[in-house]
Length: 634
Image (cartoon, one colour):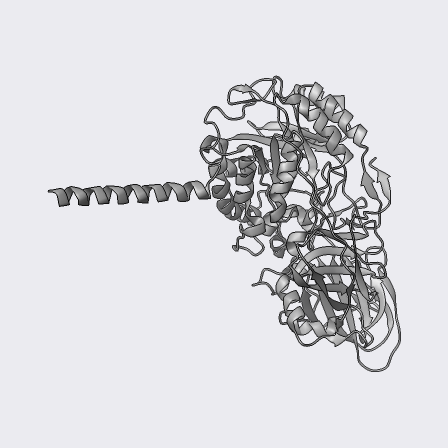
């Protein structure tokens, strides 16, 4: 009998252990679930928001997890909390989460669940802006380029080819974030339905479709839309709260909101704290005093606010968008997304931060947390270039080239498991038998370096559509290295954002034929293969351009943030340990590239620069950014 009771006791203990382990695993994977109160969530049933049944003002700020190294998420969010912000807003970039159709990535830098959980742990509510379109000065507004393989694609409409892709993405995304809603004990108090659709508005059925796509997959929290004043009358959808975007306070905007939604809370979903920069322009700044005065006035009018951006971060890699004032002459965004925000690109406090903290502290009953210490930076010794490899020599490390009678645009190349090429460069080569007038027919997207037998002869872009090729004897190889400088992220031309050569190129009025096409998307695998290869040439040999240049950065002790300077270089891309830091271009305004410490190793670090036309013998470093000459936001 005693032995039997002992056996029962052992089984009971074992059962408790198993149950405890299951509970531990669940709470470990969902650390925020159950942490927050189970009272009523965010409501918009009167002129003021309520949360947990009490009046609530959203003091929001935007930080995008995909623009900040994961190792710095906590640092940036702690600084946000210490400024008096109570709500984090973030977009979700579809093109990063589904780089190839049906291939999803929610790991490491793209671990959205970890980002939301961290916000909850630090006491921040979350407004999720899942798109599918996000704008964000991001390539194609966050839509994946493989959508454009369909010649009839109609983005942001109920065109079946688009909705099928959205449904597939939302089937992956929404179940991942739904457990983090307020109703489930998580921090998500609201979800945005699409983004700025009133400025696009090509399909009256589209916004109801997106709303239903969210609801049917388990979204239960308050739904919002976001538009500028002109888009408010076209961007709404029944049962969804409309919010407004602006930088300069307009009394008409709030009046219009009150008129279309009487007795509803007013919210500025995007209060633009600064502005983005374009290559060839100046660095935009917005006065700290003016910004804080407008924030103060917004809050005095009992409105809620979200600062876009609170911290901008960086357009790492090739992910910058482009902006078009003239319809067919887009200008690409620079690599930095500093945005003149309260928290700088490298996480520094600015005058805006200090003034804003003073204002927001008045809306908290308790003292704000202490401001976190800043991490030190380091100016490393210059990296001396030791080796180089010409563009032509690097082709052996790319995917198998395509032979095609006519040019094929990037998106329709048979690479990346037949998902096409999203970003980077594409090399088109064909044989010519004479000189004469080379005419792009305005089919270069966006910029082509032109070579005859590997000798540079000119550039074709939106301004230069033709030039004379030199005469020569016999067969010669004509090469066009075409760069995708960044797809438009805003406006009504999203369907036209195919890159590379999008049509015929003519020589003496005759279309060129029989191309060999190389995809140079310069993904980490390609760069790492380059670094590890034994094909490099000594720099004592005269380098040819375009080409790759290699050096080593030695880091003694703990790595620190720094900024890369490239005086004497022209235009290209910088890679550290295979990580694409972004584009550099001597035309500015940006003159430095942010290099975060988490991407450096103790000891030797591999530095590779792809340079189009001119190189110096070294890479330099600085402790402060140089974002160029400034101009006030108009």
